[in-house]
Amino acid sequence: MKVNRRILEWVRRLRRNLLAIWFACQHPATPVFAKMLAVLVAGYAFSPIDLIPDVIPILGYLDEFVLLPAAVYVIFKLIPKPVLAECQARADAFLHSHQHTPRNYVAALVIVLIWVGLLAWLWAQYGSSIVRWIDAALD
Image 1: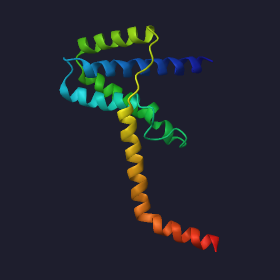
Image 2 (image 1 turned 90 degrees about the vertical axis):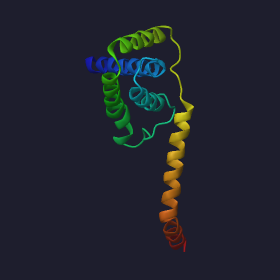
Image 3 (image 1 turned 180 degrees about the vertical axis):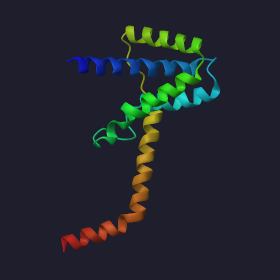
Image 4 (image 1 turned 60 degrees about the vertical axis):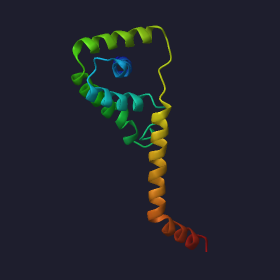
């Protein structure tokens, strides 16, 4: 029971921190490099599609449990403390107002294009072999 509460609290903190990063992207005092990294991380985090689908065992949750928290940590180190405190306060207010988490459909489109490109490359490399294998199996 305690473990479930700790995990739930960790997820809430991660969501708050991702929202703070989202607000830091829009803050004029955020350094350019931090903004660029924050845009990538927040865009990916709020995309309705994962780069690594959760149905893939172990790897599917790698982004949520390892990559996103590590990226948040790095971005927090790049953002000035007063800006970060202000963005975290905005994130808290946002969460307390029960607004929906933003969605980033541009990031979702990029992820879909990456998968389509990967599938096209795989088909170009192995498509004829797959067709021959299927023909041989059907004969």
